[in-house]
Length: 286
Image (cartoon, rainbow, N blue to C red):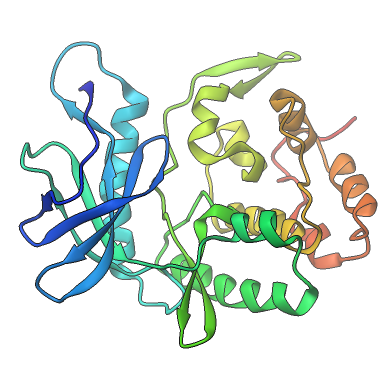
């Protein structure tokens, strides 16, 4: 499939014969997020439109092809989930050219966890639990359906309001995962290339993702533990200024993680220590 970049939509354009674009509310590497109006049910919705179109032809771009497939699979995954703290999907289809997929989901106007912490600082223990408990429950439902999120991070935890009550919801199931790997060597050990790893947010990724190994429920637990540390401290467990060094921190053992948790005052938290242990199948620190 050949990759074609497509233009952004403009206010007033129609999607799927029922949604009218209002404005752009976010841009990612693979999709643009719009606020739109559902003309049939008279409500505001969120429209996620993939930025590229894939067509048969020479020069196959496997990373984009895999991402295109995961965009479609995300809609199917979300359609199976009923948890109140999982973002609800309403509709799925394609732009008139038939090649650019569109997801329609509920619109949440409370921002995301990353922006909240950047603006107001770390959360207290009670507020952290108010976010962590429902998000954990949402992940458990996904795992019961054999769905692994693969990209749990603060920007994928969104907030909406019911009256004056803030509600956290988990978004973006599966879209950032790619099965395509191009190994590069770090100290003689094959690692995924940075361009491939970036599809699943390296600073929040689990060791098995960085190694190109199969993922499972523990993958999401690891990422959620990283997010929990961020909520409590406002600090990252892994400094991404040197991406390859961060690979080593997680892939080669637990010592760096334990030292970092101790520095952040969380070294005695057995739950976090357990969740952030490198998988036994990955190389250990000698």
